[in-house]
Length: 316
Image (cartoon, rainbow, N blue to C red; front, side):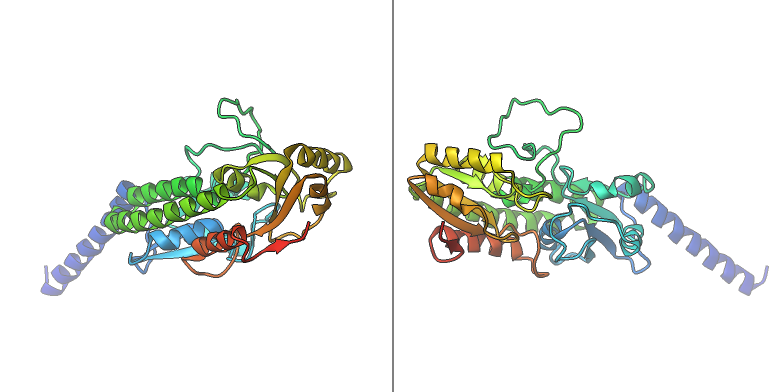
């Protein structure tokens, strides 16, 4: 055997070793790596993406939003060819869960080796349209859940914990970084949640009417009783019977907050006129925005200003 042949033989063995190491890395960590060597983390939509940006700060990974920062809620979202390419290049997929990403159900069945983390795991969910939450309520098969869990600081914190655990499990090389970042972000979320609850507790209101499901968890987190839930943005609009019932509930409550998602126009606010006192608040849910890791905290800080009477009010 010539020296040249031995040299090429060593190169071949080295390349084979690299390939084997790559296969083993995927098997033991569950993460595929791109040719660049970077782990590519794909977040399903904006709220999940913002959480991922916070947890991956300083880690040598790439974070991509599947649907873009301005898409908003994923109702009736259609998977595009570009989305399929992004998924095919993903090392790990982060989902909101609770039915938000139903448009991915079929395609994920064809990608059984892609690691997926559903951040809603273990979170107490409400059914869509519920005015009051019942912890002992059994959800039947096919139940439609309210997926807007990130709007509640308490539930959002659990999402961040689930994301942290998933990232550490599938990418242990960066586990220390994910854990450190999560601790810092969770502290900020808890502080914001405390400030919001205390501010609401100081208001002369204990009841509210929500004008979109996106506000249900928020109201519950703040300690408000939702006496009526109207669905703005739904096809066909709000029914006359629902509006009449909301007026009756407002009158019975006496003092009522009318909570609007700023993605939708302020309509039907007259339902609060039957109450002794009502106040219209237009709130941000953090469902879309800029590619800024502080976006969720900024949205909640805006809501704090609204509650304090500095922003986002309209006349009932």
